[in-house]
Length: 392
Image (spheres, rainbow, N blue to C red):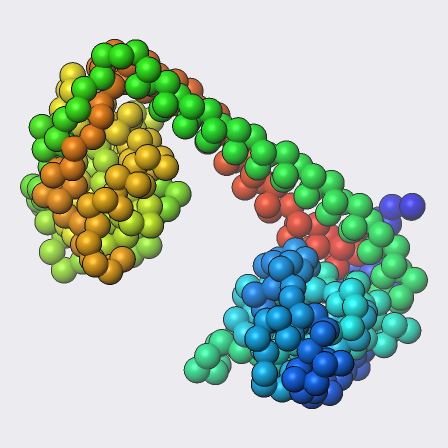
């Protein structure tokens, strides 16, 4: 297929030659016939809602029939080739092309395009573009609950090529998106492989026969003192399911009480440790401070290596251990005293050091892969920007 280069003359009005600005409402309509899923004819059809559409990709998954999904209230009928758009929280970018006839919930717009003006597959990518997402997000925030209504949807203007050019661009988009997805899956497979390697190294560290059983209170030291008046000199760090992260919010009313987290420190949110909100500041991380509500601790030198304990605590074995200490609701706090009361098997110090060295190698590889994945994940949006500027 030919490559299209946009000339300066084409750029004078902001669009390539032959493209025109048009409201979405002039290209399509919402055709939503309400049906009763208790009627077998409709209950056997696939039922789609926002949860069945993957954000930003146009893919559907885990679709069940309306009857097996337990649907009893009225649903809306759509046909194969309709564009299904989730009108709730537009920033989630949930759009998909219906492969077959089905029914959808009231949180979806079944959009039927005029193929002589807007190719349905092209419309999916159009509604996934940054331009539309930014518009829909801004419009939806006027309501109490983020939602874009029909008038707002159809009022949006886009610069579009004729259908023959839409199909040419669409073919290029599909090829390039498939290549991006292939690269993403390959990187994700490497991430999983590194995690498996880490788990294997953890298991191997107990295999030298020199480990011991110990109470964590004999292996850990809690950090309780605040950073004091130097708090302004430090960035605020938090703990997430993925590990170390910059805190979403700044310091609170008593910033002097924020705890220092230097290399070799582990900390966790005591309200969320059960779901994995645990972090570590390692030798190549910038130190900082964290909330005084967080539990901050260090391993005793020669007894418990911080890197070994961190990865063990985030492993399957560590998660099982945490659950043995938990009582009551998920939101119950797990302070240092309860964690320290636990009894665990600890490898010899030499075995911990070997694991720590291996874990550092794996961590470096993980960081490089994370950068690759971040770059790969940014490609679809960049590609769509090119497509809707006429640069493909």
